[in-house]
Length: 174
Image (cartoon, rainbow, N blue to C red; front, side):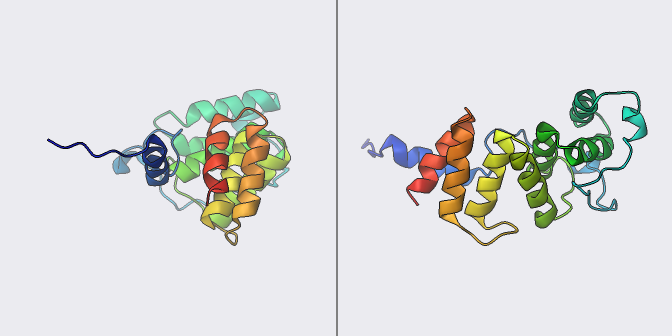
C-alpha cells in the first residue's frame, strides 16, 4: 500500500476551511430550536432591563443570558443578551452573535449579527473582533475585504484570542 505525502499545513487549511466556527458546539436538534417569529434584536437598545434582570447588575444579567442559551428555552436568552450588549457588555454581544452564527438561535439576518460583532469589538471583546474579521473575510453583511479581516484578526490575536491567531495566519496567506 502506497502512502500519500501531504504537508500538515495543507491538512490544517483544509480542515479550517471546512468548518465555519471551530469553537462552537453543534446546533440543537431542529425540534428544539426556537422559531424565527421574534423581531430582530436591537443591539443599541437602552431600554430598561428585561424583568429577569431587574434586580441584577449588568454582568449578572449577561451571565444569566449565557446560561439560558443551554436551557430548554434558549430563545429566552435573547432579550437579556441584547440588553446587556446594548449597554456595552462586550461579551454579551459576542455570545449572542456566536449563538446566531452557530445556529443555536434563529438568525435575525447577517446585517444584525454584523452589528452585534461591530458593537462587541468596539466594546473590547476579542471574540467579537474575531467574528467581525470572519464577517469581512466571508463577505457576510459587508463587502469581502481580506485586508480588513486580517487586521481585525491580528488585533484579536494580540488580545490572546487563539482562534483569531490561527485565522489571521490563514487569511494573510489568501
